[in-house]
Image 1 (spheres, one colour):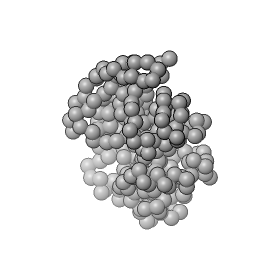
Image 2 (cartoon, rainbow, N blue to C red):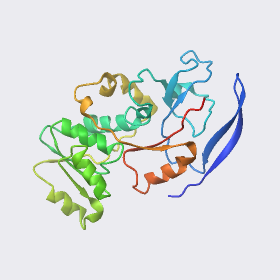
Image 3 (tube, rainbow, N blue to C red):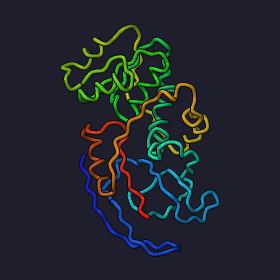
Image 4 (spheres, rainbow, N blue to C red):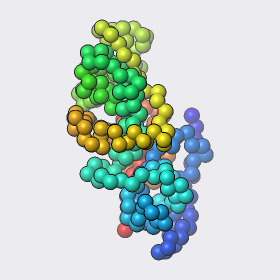
Length: 248
């Protein structure tokens, strides 16, 4: 996959002052990852100045949001704001719906998780562990394999790049019944956020305090293109995101 980007400067006028806007423009948009922002001004009844929101945003310092229905007000700030781009957003919902609603294994069954150190895979593996399943994961480096077993609590893990035959590797780890989750192929749409009220993380449901969540954070807007490319080279662990430091 190839993509190109450019760093552009724009003039952006707010009711308070005119400022320069820095933005990353991609040649193509392979994914829509959510972002977190702070409202500088709002004419919408659901949002006011100073509110923190998450939803579909652009890679830039300032944005005019013409579709406020794509934003959600952040009510809980006792967790890192970056969680609203991962575990409390698409990745968390994908893992939760894919495992509990679609895969739905029973206690004692065996679960195999591919791409297990990724933003979704690491959660699926831990859901399976909390459910009493025997969990095996695969990853692309020995360091990630170690992370799966010693940080995320997988029962077994292997580096698929070191295996001559993936089927043989899976048979080697097979004990009893298998439930293959992989990275759940469940497409989350914005309408699915109706599930939000029932999402256990929001209510700190039983067992969720035991979840370990790792993010790969790159600071500064300029670092965003490189961070994106890391997604397709296997160099990141967990949710890849960039963080723009607020300037006073």
